[in-house]
Every structure is written in C-alpha cells, then in structure tokens.
Image (cartoon, rainbow, N blue to C red; front, side, top):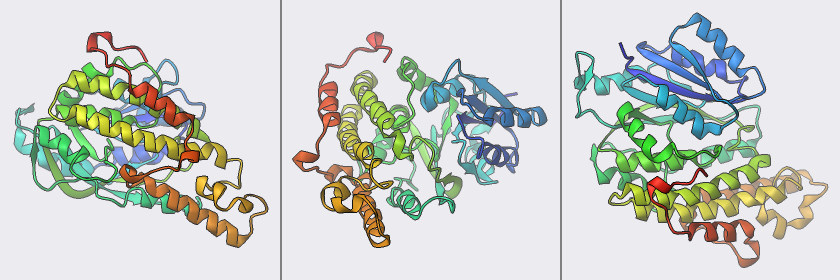
Length: 376
C-alpha cells in the first residue's frame, strides 16, 4: 500500500545536520510516510549516518546518484521513486515540526476514499515556516538570514484555482517572489507531470533550482490551499552553497544556466502567465547575478563588504578596527536588501560586470521547442 507522504531529502556533505532531519521525519506524529534520502556523492559521513537510520527504520530508503549532480537532479530522482500520495521536499540541514505530516493529512483526508485520492484534492498545500538562526555563525549571517525572508511568502488563506496560482506567487506583488519548494506539499501526480518539462536538464544545479521547479509546478497546478501552521524549520547553514561567499561563482553559473531555460520552458508550458513570469524572473536573475558577483571580490577583503564597502569605504579593507567592522556589516546588510526588492535594484554603470552582459546575451536566444531541448 502506498504511503500518504513521501519526504525527499537531497544529501550532500551534511553530516552535521542529517541526523536531525531524519529524526524529525521518523518521529512524526503521523507515521504513514516514506523517507527518500538521495545520496549526491559527498565526501563526508552523511550517507553512512543515513544508512544506519535506514537499518533501524524500514521507511527510510537510500537512493544514490552516479556522481555529484546537485540538488535539482537529486530531487528529480526522488520524485521518480516516490510512492506517496503527496510529496514533501526537506533540505538536509532543516527539519520538520513533529506534527507536520499530521496537519497536512487533515487537509487531504476528506479527499481519500479506500486509499484512493480524489481528483478534487489540492495539487499544492502551502504552509508556513520557522526561520532558525545559528548561534555558532556570525551576527551578520543571522541578520541576513532573517532579512531575506521578512517579506510575505504569498501564502493565501483563500483557495486558488488554475492560473490564479502562478499569478499569486509571481505577479501579484512587486517584491522578490517566494518560490521556495520546501514550504509546500505537492500531489505526486503534479510532480510527475512536471518531469516532462524538467527531466531533460542534465547540468548539475544547486542555486535557484527552487525557482525553476516551482515555476513549472505553479503553472501546471489546478488547485491550491493554504494551512495557517508553521510546519517547517528553515535553518541557517553558512557552509551551504546558498550561503557560502566562496560559492558565489557557482551560484552565478547556475543562475545564468537557469536563465537560458526559463523562456524555453515557458514556451512549452503555454499557460496564461508563463511567458510574462519567465521575463520577470530573468530580470530578477540579472539583479541577483550582479549582487552575487560582489562576493568574488569581497572575499579578498576582510570576510565581506561588497561593492558598497569597496567603492565607498575602501580604507576599511585592511586592518579593520571594531568600528569599521560594524560599518562593513552595515554595508553588507544594505546591499543584501536587493534580495527583497530586486525589481528596484539598480546598479551604477561602473558596478556592472561581465555576468550581466553574459546573461543578457543568453536570454536573448530564440526558445526551442520541447523536442529540441538541449542537454544543458
């Protein structure tokens, strides 16, 4: 008998966190679940820890990538193996609240009869999250972690249908869209449908992958409901690719590649708002690439400062005193506000770099039809 929920956990060099994530799953108050740990071929003991849990709990399965393929490919692998009626995406350095699956089940129970899910069951169930800091990480990192998620997540108390779903998440407001995968639960059939548009992508991707996948899901979904409960704990992990300043070149590369894919996928989706959303997301990506580019030079400074600290207060780059260190932290915070309102994020001409011209050239290419999607 198929479980009610599948929980997909991409796993790469997270030995410090994986036990916590797995404990949060196996101790759910609602136990009809399967836990899919996708080994992305890291070099630490993450998978060994997961295998020990799997030996003790038959609900845990270990899936292995042939090589390090990134978060995006790991999630696709989990989707292909999932058996649950619904699927949750859990990052290995985060965790679920104990009653997460129970709350979600209460939303879908009216649509289940004799273990069969009614076609009227919601495609997407959206819940809220808790943003947990890290006492072992710097104050600046904790502030930025909170600041980037201070704006509304477009959670809706009102059920949504068809095109209103994509419009709600991407076009309804002017702030940076919240396209995170982990604060939602998805009907398995919706995820399987999304594979038609996504499984051609071969390049390892780890940054902006939520944007790419949720862009497809929101355009395909026919129904949405929101749960006013905080079911996911999103934790700060300063060593992850999304937080580590040294990983800025990889983040930029991933965003450039995703920019090449959005318009092609939008053409093939051919839904009411797909093309408009793809154009908007490309503009967002250009802003984020410019923002991320600051890390490439700032790592040469005293652990931070961006273009503001480089051009406005260059004398603070060496022999930083306690006062100047605070100024550098303030500079980082001000610059990172771009994550909140990328629509209005404008760079002075001399701040622009090759990343911007590259993405402009890439996104001007004529979209391909689905049958001709490149193995990018």
